[in-house]
Image (cartoon, rainbow, N blue to C red; front, top):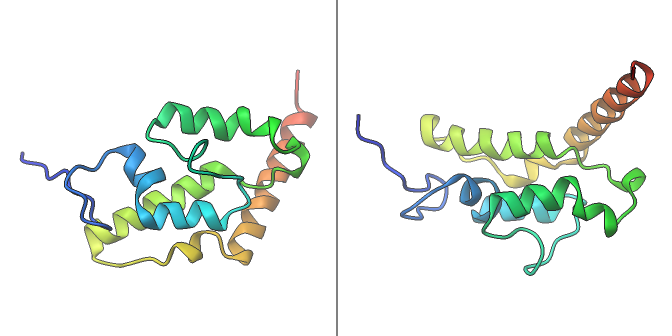
Length: 123
């Protein structure tokens, strides 16, 4: 089976996971609209490992964990879903949809509720 590696949203000739989630212009816009501190020197970068390290550990030296209200797994999921909608269904999703207030409030509620449950049931 032949597979094209181009970016369906931006047309880059070589797409990889880092490009799709962190470097593609619609993904960059989604991250900029989130409350995640970012700059071209620290986040996002061309390394998936550096980006994940930043999101889950290093960013805590920039902002207090209690102020960190971005549920990253949801943002990544929305970015990937928008990519797949474009690739498989031809639907363009506005990056603002993934971080719009209602969506973010729901994700933040689920994120906080999940943390409360984990703390409650910690062995």
